[in-house]
Length: 457
Image 1 (cartoon, rainbow, N blue to C red):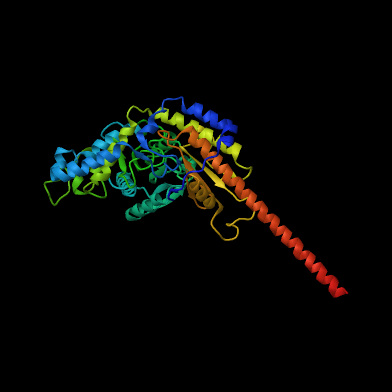
Image 2 (tube, rainbow, N blue to C red; image 1 turned 45 degrees about the vertical axis):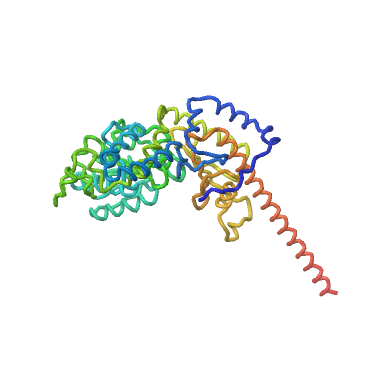
């Protein structure tokens, strides 16, 4: 959904002065360890709460890409593969991401899309699984592409796919399960799944654990090594702010790397890539997760974007994320008319990612009831017109992503206020529409009575 270019509407000085939450937001923004990191991004007066789909532009990126284009591509040209470090970018940038996902160096490689990395991880995991496995488990609430790819990989290996709710994986896994593909955070509801306990349950059955970190990396602590995760994938354009279509990454646990067999054995992962041998021999370590020539412009934009994390502790990010989402939920409760929205994101901190998803329901007659656009879609479109950008997931979910590096408490308060304003106007319009309908019915009834009286006379 695109951002509106209209000037964001202000609540007005009188309304702002009457809102104690706005004063509290200013106090919260003046405290804490992440008070200046917003300055590392290119932002405006728009309240941007869609960083869980596309992160904001870090200030370091434009100049870095201009330098890459002008000097490295424009002047060094082919020499940049060695002189500018292009060739080693996938593993170098992987090592910069590693601390954000709780991994030691040498276990993360950057390149290709999330979908391709899911295919590598699932197929590679199936190939490492023990003999006699007949199935893989897939998070029943997963982002659809993960499910599509898991089913394709399983079909190629002659395995069945069984969708299972994450909370039931420990009960459903068997010795015949090759692996389970699980989302760390549910993309729709923002629910955080317990990586440690689910991974332990899988391992107790001899099953590999494959995790999708798209909605958690950069928003909260991830402990791949500590939890003993086997394989993991993630995108970089959400909370890592790498830019639209920026390359994804693949994690392969150190102890599994020599057994990991990529289903896409490209020349970049060959032990001697410039030997041009007809036979394939994989490189050592996580490099065997590479495939073909990396997308250098996007790769180096991501590397520059990661500079925004310098000096930032992921524990501070998590603390602010929870404080922001708590505060937003409090403000929504105060500002929204009763019964118009409800949170489908868990209130418990241990079960919450870094977004708030609200189910939005009509209070009465609506365009949706008459076959028009869904009410939630109408609400989000109006929020965007008023300078608050989140997104909408059919049929009724409003999603608001909180990126602690640049989202402020003032953003959270203003978003809740504008949401309440839109919902109040919607409720008033529905009430007026209902009154008009009732009035019309009464008039029609009176006319019928008069006609009946005339007939009787």
